[in-house]
Image (cartoon, rainbow, N blue to C red; front, top):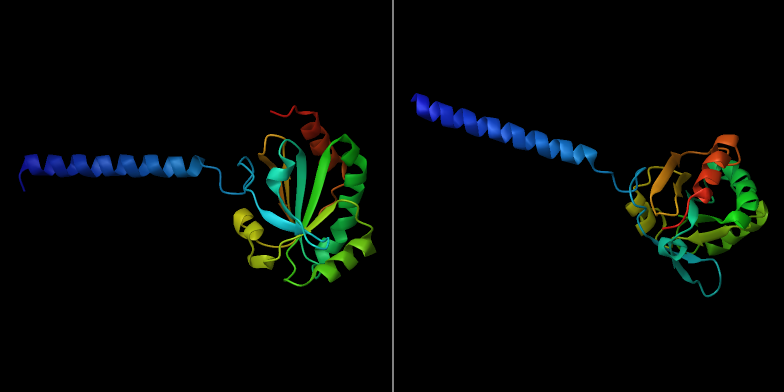
Length: 185
């Protein structure tokens, strides 16, 4: 192999490494779909009313939203629901929108309504009629239940948490207060 060919091959290899590294850096700097810092993906779910009414995240544009993905059969979901209700009662008058979307299987609306009544939930409870394989779970890449996403007025995900937590804790209340104090764009 001549020196000229070797130099060309080395230059091509170096260019390939630089391009690969640049693409990798760009990919690492992108916000994953449904991740903190990314725009909250839209979804569709239905109310528990008869007949059901379609709702989506875009219905809450400009609001601070706590989006909880849960199911009636989920033990940890049952544990955290009272703290979500307390947070809702404290901050709904200030503008917080709590939306709990059940991923129970189709036809479970009566059981979901029973759950809402049992826990005295006063925030909006919706149902993804496609269950765990529905648009919400796909768009947010949920990996378990409960899974909660807090969205700022700007539509950006500010917090994401898998598992039950005390949403009425000082830290969570401080986050909600800070987000509510931000101006809508």
